[in-house]
Image (cartoon, rainbow, N blue to C red; front, top):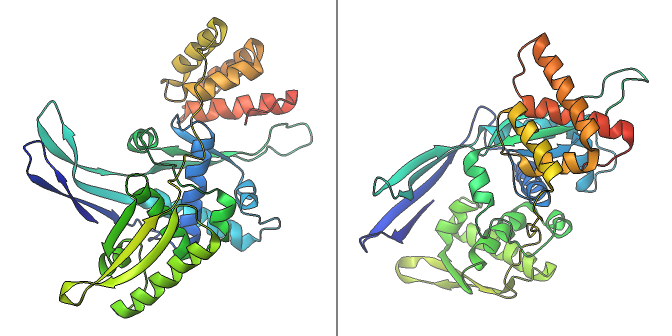
Length: 332
């Protein structure tokens, strides 16, 4: 995808964004639904930190209304995680570097490792299975920017839509955060969504059907849609905004941590080697208390004595969730 912005010297600067697939390919409609799920979960969890806690694979599927998922559903979900982890995003003139006074290119990924923890066998093992996926620093910065979650509809509405309608709804939500009227050549929009069609007239027909579907479904942000011919035999798609998208998950303003919680969070951050997940650790400290935090840190220290720990934050989260399950305390 390409666009143009006005540079620091007043001249236009061309920008381009290209997504390259990994070994698992681009995926399909189920992959885009998983990406939507993860974005919503990250927002629900405060849009902070380096992890998205998704619980179990079954809990993800149950968010979509799938009460009795099959083995095929679980296999597809694991594959979709691999697809998302493989996306490699290449950006030309991605941002202005003030120190070097120049535009910078950037190659980055959305996600890092994904962890599927399992409950230990046996009636006295305790704990619950859970999982999380690591998010990149670029993803974290984007999550804090305006408009990332301003969709104007909830997940129940999203799940009812057809795959192309889902992609178009998210695309329009992004455009309508700053535009009351969005116009784009059909051929360019068809490549961006994408619309699978061999001929432009087929793309026009498919795009019109998706837009009409959104209007019938009652997408608040979309008031009307029309196609108009342009010079050179091209066609323009015109979308007129209805109700501007509002952020369904505004990040709440947290009061400052109490001195006791702040002290515990500081110890946790020192143990795991960073403060990226301060909001999560503060929640754990508030709900578990000093004794449980000391116990979790002790388990982490013991695990390190027995061998290298690749992800101390993930392992400490597991310990805290096991302790919370024993005490009947909800962390999420």
